[in-house]
Length: 223
Figure 1: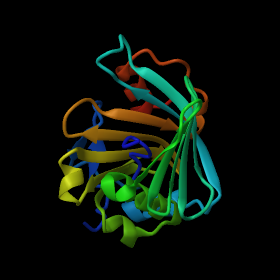
Figure 2: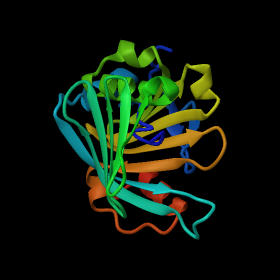
Figure 3: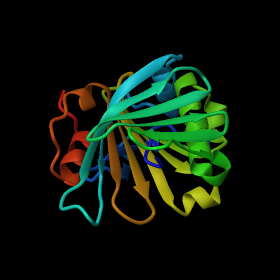
């Protein structure tokens, strides 16, 4: 669940002054006419509830020969609720609401726990809601932001301010074009980056056989 719209979310946003390299890192000094800033991106990502989007996520494991591909839907039925529904290869629903997370899997007793135990999830819920409502102040209270690129291909890098969260998570990178968010890449302090494909990119994604394949789609989706 830490990989959920391990979603989102700023230091005042900087006007783009860098370009994307092949590995998804930022190269300074390449700003040009038509670049975007964080405000431009946030305005175009505003989505009042109810809203939903399909997702495809690749999850690695030392016990598996290849990463596990999860698919399903993220939903925000109201301003206070975030739902992650996994439909394959198993059915599981995670609901974050009123300071509590509930995880329900078919055939098992639902598990409930307070977000106070996992502040990253509390930040996720607040950040996701702030992103969809365009609440820059709320986003900036939890993350620093750097915007890169142009309207046809942009990237928003978000780094957690909270020391505990930052000890686990280096950054969350949102990638998209125009008003479409097509990928969220979670970069842990240790371990491989984890891409979550969203929207039309997720809907047309075939079975992925490697993390590299998922990262390629995340960073350079087909048009």
